[in-house]
Image (cartoon, rainbow, N blue to C red; front, side, top):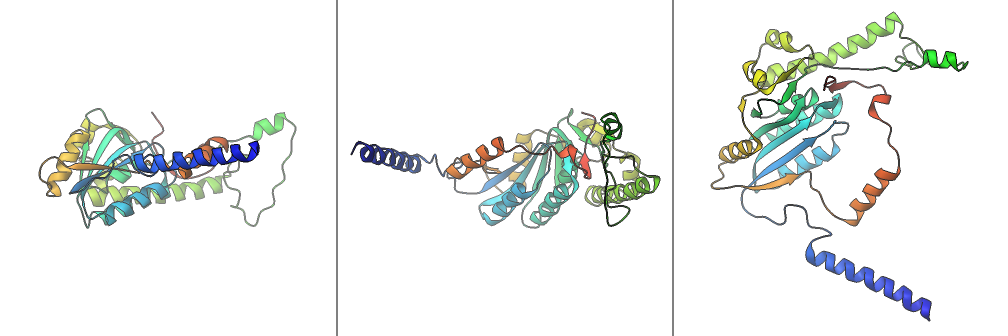
Length: 291
């Protein structure tokens, strides 16, 4: 009987905790609470960009909310993988068809971070923001000498001569180097084209500054890479004005941070299962490499 009593007590306490959680909003309520009226969405792009999913979901939610009249992109990112950066850029361009978008650059908005900023109607920056870095990088680790020291041999079977290009087990051949460089050059050209089209610069003007170098926000204004000096609050005010919002706007934050059981389990999963560092795998990155 004692065992049955304790089992019942445990389930009772869990049920009470769930009911209290629903009542207080702890389980399902997001950080903004429940707001009505016209709003400005604040989408924060933070850290190295390796996946676009959470940002694309946020953009979809913003588009569906009829009370959101404008978007502020708050960017604190040195860039990241090419594909996700381009996906976010493309979806923001689509969003601009239905609402104004203002980019606010934080401490760093470089390479892929700057690529995304180019999708906005206007870019505001701090004077000391690190931005620019219009370029592409691919890095390889070479364990050849380590394998030689360990007296280990490796055999590779492949379907074509380029299948293991960039292998850490050997040096690049001249042919592989040329092939990979051509790929990098193509992706670099895509970046330069995006800057030219969105910033109203000629291809020649972009070429002069698209060699991977970084700029301060102040320098970027002179180069027409950004529009003006301004804080995040300035960006919110500008977005509200463009969205015809009167008075102080309600600001709703994205991506949403929810305290749900499934999110707690997700956090536990990511903390227990180790992730492979991105720079241990080959990839093309719009990523600043000097800060």
